[in-house]
Length: 507
Figure 1 (cartoon, rainbow, N blue to C red):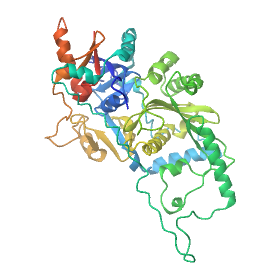
Figure 2: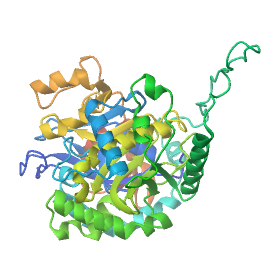
Figure 3: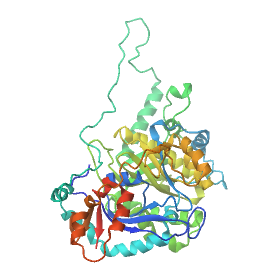
């Protein structure tokens, strides 16, 4: 995936003071540790979110679970095993009725909430702005990274230093086409040949070919999918519909609306991203003011760029990865030629991670928060066909102590991340524990600890005076008071593996 020259560079800020909570509205009860990421590989971010971290723009933070007022547990859904619930089916049918007939029920709010809640509130907007201003003066750090030696070279220079990075091997791509079976043709006169498709009417075949051509034409402009008339499969009549079948449900040719979903990389050099940038920024402002009651100054273009366009993730490609690559993307929902919603997502080695969603307030009754989550689960399943290990959909944080945030647990089967052992536990086993206490060690094995706990702080990498070195070498060169306690805290939060790959900036 990423070569040895690709580094993650962060500045750690800790975080001892409490700030406003966006859930219980406590003014000083929200506690988290944070760091500013100048650049980050997708593998490092994957490993960080698997230790309870989450990003807001380039700011990456981790709630202090035993101290914060509303403990936030990382939640993931098993996309391949997901089956829509009754409420999910109602949302999908409501969208299909709107597209086909134009039915729009005014005044009804999204009963299931937004899948991607306001990360600004989670991370503390005032703290984020202070960090942003402090770090803008250090933009040269990222440029210096191109001249840095490889991690392997640095570790060789350190005494008995052997890298133990957790990045998975890229040399054994798995074919999802393996195991295909064929049926032998019967003898003449003994029935239909099961190896050949069933006979279909010429009108149906012409209709299908026309739709395929239209899909190919749209795909030529980028990754997209259109809700349009499709030929139903025989399975629809014999069993409950799959998520994909609901999304691609057959619609009349004279449908009232046309909905298209486009995947656009977050890249200011990408023509498709730039062509829709102003329209997307304006939609964000509309959403924030109408749904969250923001002041215009709080949802300006600069805030939009900082929050939803500035990403530390470097675009990466791998032989066994998805065709669109890894990194940050905007999944745009175009209705009759205009953007009505945007889902911000990160495509990582083993998951699609949802970051945020914003939409036009006029379509609030369509439950676009839940609808977009269902589309993103279907998209994850699509990517898994290209990259077998990419099979999870991360919904951000699950906050059991906040009733309005429990809806994320409805996307099942799903797991919560244990805040002490960092292993995944099925949500069914977690709910009784969280009913009894806001904070809980979700894994109940008393002998199990953090497998990536810090074992050797001296092997953690730092970036000091444009030179990469292990912390042991840096501590010998450093003058003044020791920063060992701060570095120890940072390393314990990111884990030994990440500490040996990520460069911690030291001034």
